[in-house]
Length: 461
Ligand code: ZN
Image 1 (tube, rainbow, N blue to C red):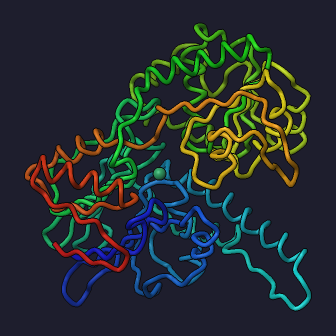
Image 2: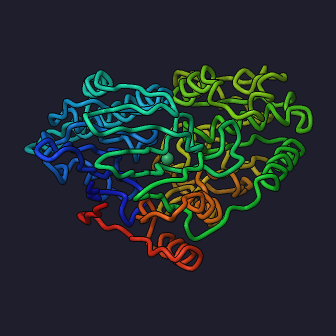
């Protein structure tokens, strides 16, 4: 079995790994993930580049979970000729359809906007893919529940195990040529709300492990929750709104979970809670009918009152008009809206209304990338530009650090520690600083020299 690394090797997005295995004369090419690069304009432009392999040679695709940096180029692969099966865990398949349709409509509206304004003689911009391409891709999806071993070709089997990162997120086990490969996908932290802990795996010949937080440990989750409750109290006393930028999958649902769990303690009934994102609303529905994937603690929260996804004061807004109506609320609103880094999306409209208000509070619950509006606010900017206008920052900015959906260095070490004997290890999906720190720890503890893979590198087992 050979694995060739094409993406997310030395960076955190654009997951793309190619496995070659099978009987001599009938070698199969199985792709693990087909993600988009996200970040700078240059990285995003690279998503339209040709794939670094012959698309016709790919026999199957296995996706680990529904984040765009793991599935974002799937419709493009299909548009360029891929006709094989796309294997996904059941909830992943449902979330994938929502995420890819959103990605297609963003691409379509970007292209439309460009074409409307394009100068005479400039070429027309084509969207990376359309909603029709997404429908074509979804028709090739085949679902597989967790913990079910399935032969995808003669001599090649796969199984999904719960990775505890977002709903449906999977660790992929792949058996071929008498060897076993384990691809971690993205691993969740232990004790993440709603979801189970990442499944420990004991046997492998080669492990591909993510290393996003390979160089640091998260703040204690319990402290973070206390902090969140205190901020809500403070905001109520100040008589303002609370704005929480959050991505549609994972964090938005987690926040609602904490609100339900601390309903009485935080006196939540006095607030109005707005989830101002049609996409997050759809994702809530998918979470809502997959209780079988919840951990025991979450099952208990759902058995109690109120249901996190049906809080009596929760408004999930759809159209732009409904979203604009929130502008009338000057106090007592908790508004969760995307994007998570405040570099686009509906949160910008709410910021415009609230940036100048001393009584308003802005709470960041996720990582703020360099160059984003979120980062400028976290860094204490006094003036910021939104939609071409400058706004004075009077509202109070908080960063709440312990709600990551990724395992930290402890978690990664613990997960790899379950393997016995210790298999060969390739670190993917992490910046070099994180990978080097993690490799150092593993070398010291287990005597294993982890490979920091680079695009174009091949490993054989
Ligand atoms: Zn992810």
